[in-house]
Length: 165
Image 1 (cartoon, rainbow, N blue to C red):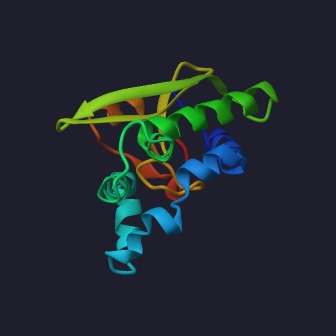
Image 2 (cartoon, rainbow, N blue to C red; image 1 turned 45 degrees about the horizontal axis):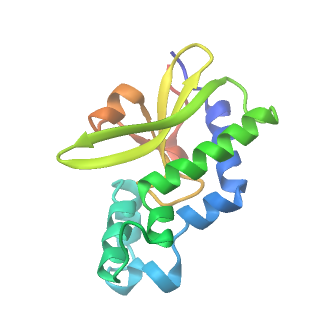
């Protein structure tokens, strides 16, 4: 049950290159600038604490957006999972990702909060989760073993990821 650094690199590269992923993941400065109400270092705390997407959701709600609004739906965890899955499938068909057998969404309820992310099954049947909503960084999702993600434990930011054994 391994996820190699190389496979993770290919997955992140496929998502980062996709325009729909860029639109859904990267914060829109006119809509949800977190700097409006946080200190400059707060975005790092939100990214590495896995809270960036939740704070953006709150900011969108405070601006009057909600379920059913196309912008809101695209930028919440469900929307981000949908576009990342599509980008990964496209890259898999183009043989730009090795070591991945399948990709889908994964859902959890933890501490009463529902959350969706991108589930990967490797060719050796390992199960991993890439969570771009938690960081809102195209090139820095949090990565977990699926069993850990279900209980919100042991995630590592991609920038520190060296592979799972």
